[in-house]
Image (cartoon, rainbow, N blue to C red):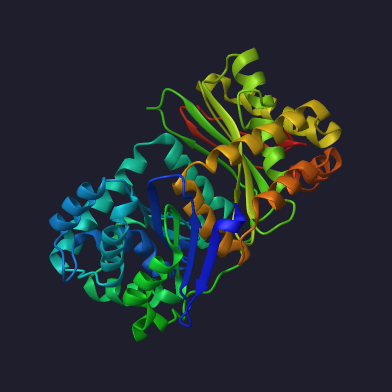
Length: 425
């Protein structure tokens, strides 16, 4: 895989990455900014997500309607997203449409109008989006829980902001933050598919190469190191049929050499239908339809979490089973059979992803952001194969400790109280 990857760096900080896939007729073109919601000042919470929306509302060359029509003409597969540590825009097109797709995305991101009337309308749209989150029990529990898990830290704030902050995003504030943050210094342009590296470099130079405003640095974009708490959060909502619960603990960060083992550990507990939690809670006990575990890894910290939805009267049983399974892994580790299965599952997922230009373009950008280099497929597979039973158990012992376990629940819980002793590992 790596032999088809080319990289070019501009003096202003712009990075170009391409991964040539000569046997396909598609290209995924992505503009990925190294900044997400966690670098926003508190009073501007949600402005990255707001800008993600606002760039679709017109440029000097295109109206909002023309952007929509052109997107549909190119195939309509344009995805934009805001996360805590990145903001991205990606489009997948037929290879001969690449230049048109580049012109569209680059124009939107380099030359947005930020018309005041359009911004007011988008404020209302995003406030409705926030209300949608409030209607989703899983999402609202996640936001309540994260706020307590990362106290007074941007990782605990909503990516979309609050209605109060969103209403302050006028043209002046939006233009200023866009110039400071959404510029070439923070930009990675990644393309995968039937693409020529030189063409992307030439197009990038046209839009982002010499513009002096692209060198502005946001003075407030300082990463704050989080202190992860271990809260017990229980919120009653008598209108819900199910209770939703989260069990969490600190975990390795995205740069850690132990990230491969950490992923396998999370998958052993709840990553698939053969995982311990799925088999015990869903298949053996029939206590939940949805149950699983995952690892969220940021550049300086990580969070392991278990999620389940069950009837309120079964909440404590699901909690006890989950804690018991975590305890077993800490005390006994996992079996060699589980480890080999999980390695095969992980490797298969990676290899299948190589067939998708969208996956490959996203991977180029993430590796550049987190590691500052492209990690070869061979290196990745070797690291996965090298994960040992001892490494898995050492991780479990280090992070799954009673005083580090956090718990959150939302539902018609009728005075449910959980003490720290209930979470004993």
